[in-house]
Image (cartoon, rainbow, N blue to C red; front, side, top):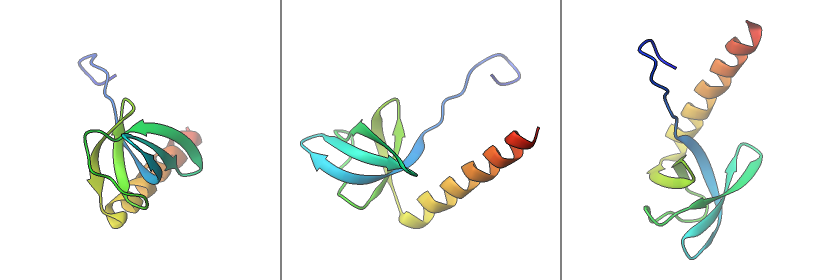
Length: 81
């Protein structure tokens, strides 16, 4: 929760591995899940931001990898505490 007691949700970048109708298999750095792709026109190999099971935005590979690296750094710092 933030300082005023409101929780915050994150959209996580994932690589699209398969697309079947509006459902895709996406890879969160080795964790494979299904995501609803009906809100974006994502293709296999592209990166998407997934929030609450829905892909909500297509990202460039560069932006996705930069974001994932930042998440790794945050996790690393958090694990030291």
